[in-house]
Image (cartoon, rainbow, N blue to C red; front, side):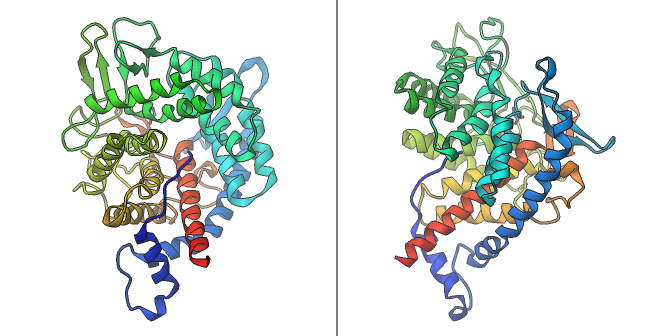
Length: 421
Ligand code: GLY
């Protein structure tokens, strides 16, 4: 969610060349014209996104059901019936819709989005005590974490720290890992998925808020052990690993949401790129930076990566459905990764992110108003092997798309400031 790092020399060069592009026939890498085109389009993309979400909020509000503790959140859209897919507060994506409202507030400055974001965020409060899965990190950090950052308030610290405590109750000291799925005291299995890396940002931030180093210790241990077991030599990611809690070895590998055990599920790969970049930002452990690059290179240089930069739902399933959510997560992660490396590497990551965001903002993926349940991105894939959510909008695709665009905007703004000094 946060991001840091210094602007690279190549970015500065790119901006300079863009500003004076009439004097130059072509730009050296990165492709400055692509960056300036995307930058010029941003106000329009944010305006359209705001229009979509105003309509989405209006449609979701009567379905949100606050009575009987049944709090529902808009997650997707069932095109066949034309209904919004409303999911329980416990569903792993319930924080993404409030998170998108926060990003729209940042993008537009419209206080209507701030007030909506506060309302939808605070409905998530009961999740701080939910210890039945690892997803509280996603749920509470995309919502309350953004609220805290954007409002610059400490009024959400207590609930975020409580959530971090709950998440750490799923940590197994012997393995050095947080259990992803299943009851926290289950002995028969201990499932871990790369998606879990995304929950670690909550722990890093909770350490800073509370002054308790134990949260960050858990996060860093989880990232280190995951790095040892979850990746093939080429940087491709497994989805589900089941650990033996006695021998501490991996006892089974499952394809999970991927096409097969030996292929890389695209969204898992994107979680890994984003997750290790974020963990490098927080810890400055150079191994995390290396891992993030290895995962990124696997994806970008993959022979099955389509020309428009939006991956098929699995790197082993070329020609099948794209997953726009995997493209958005990867683009947002790569923009941050590009700030931690220099030269050609930085240019490569930023250029790819710009290409993917540009594709996602085109009519190939960005829905027209009134279609797609008014979610922004079409063509997401949730869990194809389960026949669930194939070629459909997904709330988290929108969230990381908006985040990626905002990250891109911030880099361009910073660059401009730097050049004006
Ligand atoms: N578990 C998160 C995902 O489906 O990507």
